[in-house]
Image (cartoon, rainbow, N blue to C red; front, side, top):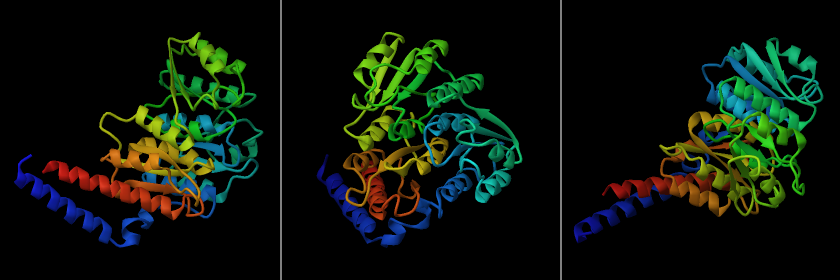
Length: 348
């Protein structure tokens, strides 16, 4: 590089860096545009729905917002239907959820889970035609969702295999494109697949299985069992849930890159449930945040900086500051702004 180009690039770096640092804190980091949240998890899911589907949707996917077992498999279904995920209680449909179903102009509601998680009275209270997708347990429900996806035209030759008794890795996987069925391996210490999942690998014609999470999440015993049943097995994992979400986003990065990032707490499932199809619809990566003592992992910051397509105004936190700390949002926004600066400098 000749000296004149070096001087120009250095000058641009200084000016743009100063501009980023001098931006007002509220405007730069924590503007209302950087959060989708409500007073309860149901209100947050509705806020996500309104932002992602302002012109409505023919479909909505309804899940219990207080238990994750069946709901974790719902993300790819919502993505395929181009529908929001809305939350309910078991025996009562929140008024805010019903109002959103009406605003969307929904023609059909897909309920994921049996009557033990979403009662028939709730289904009828939607006032819409509804389809219930359920099995006798979380494993069978996940298989039933996969079968519905196949019926809707989604290939089941490639599936995600996730831990069944925790939510973090499956939530991150639910946001990837194209939509892939999510099946459950079993509990963290299990050494063999649940029967329903084992049968589904054959029944669905699975050729490729993507295990999300390390060997402490999905055991090597299960990995070997799957390897004996399908052509290809890939494990996508980091040292913890935050790094695993980053690795999942990296593994399934769109050809044209990410256009934004959704931040959801790694210590709760409700907001990320609704955030998965929202992220997929917008071409955003779904990344997990921590608590006040470690608001956002360095791996998440590094990922945002490395993906210049993630713009500062397209960093969206799901939930209020008690769920996703302000510091996590501000650090993520500043990382995106820094990536913008470096992208501009590369032009010179």
